[in-house]
Each structure stands twice: as structure tokens, then as C-alpha cells.
Image (cartoon, rainbow, N blue to C red; front, side):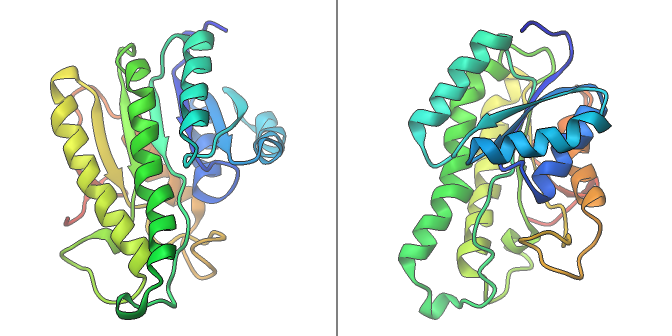
Length: 235
């Protein structure tokens, strides 16, 4: 399936921020690979969203903790499109607000890191060859201000530490890929009313808009930054 439209991939996109990010990118005319751990969840999200957007939404199964599956999707994307223009690492788990670092179950922390850090890392590595084939490659890591060292406090240990590590990965990748004009940024969508964020947060549309902003930056845009609503955040 050859296309001149930008090709974007969003992980964890069957609900919440990921789903809305996929919708907004498709509304801009992108061909979006909407990924979920279960294919039927991806298919349901696409069926619900497709009639509302100008671009193309395609369901894909992707569990970012499964290395073989990540590599397999990269191979099939190369066969189908020959490139990837935008990678949004959105998949995340375990907003552990009831936990404390002094008593955290380290097995739980390890499982959280497997998705929130290593999942994003292996997905970035697998799709880098395809991003290198893009004329305007963008990599967006969906982070959280709970990963900001400057503002970090106690509680939410697994999630906060996983996002601090994701921010560090963002800086590493941005610096290493700068010469290849791949813009890599971390985005905090803010407290958003989703299944993970819980009630009382802001509209999901606003949170996703900051991610889409980073995914569609001009070639002169920033790289290696941490943003919310297009404005810099403290690391």
C-alpha cells in the first residue's frame, strides 16, 4: 500500500490519549497504524473512529513487551509502506498512586519499566530504519511531569521512575539522531480524564493535541525537549 500521506504509528492507541492522538493525526490526513495489545481492540477503535476522519486508520496488534512482535510489525510496515514518518510511543501501564518507594514491590516496578521504558526503547530501535527513510521523521515519547526530577516527590514510584527514565532515553536518542534530522521529544499531556488518569482531569483532546504538535513539528522544530501544550517543562 503505497501512500504519499504521512505514515504514523501510535502504540497503546485503542483508548485514552493514544486513541485521541491517532484520531487527530488521521484527521490531519495521516495514514495511522492504530496499535493495541489485542487486535480486536484495535479493530474496534478503528471502526468507531474511521468514519470521522479524513485520513486512514489501520488496526495493528502490538504488545511493546514482545520483541518478536515489535520486530514483526516493523517488517510488515516496511513491506507495506517502505517508511515510517511518525512514531508515538504512548503505551504505558500502572499509574501506581497508592504505592510508596520505601515499600514498593520491585517485581511490579520491573513490569512497569518493561512497558513504559523498555517497550518504548525496543519500539524506537525496531522502527528507526523506517524513520530514516522518511523525509520528515518524528519520534514522540509520551511522558509525564511525574517523571520530572525538578518537581518529583514521593509516591507513584514505578510510574514516576519509568517516566524519568523515558525522559532520559529521549535525550539520548535526540542527541544521537540529531545529525540524521530525526526530531525526538518527550511530551506530557497533563492530567487528562482517561481510564488511567481518572476523573477530574482535563479534556483528552487537549492532552493529545500536545502530542500531535510534537509529531508534526517543522524541520526547524526542537529536538531533545520535554513539553506540555507546546511549552517547555523542567526536566
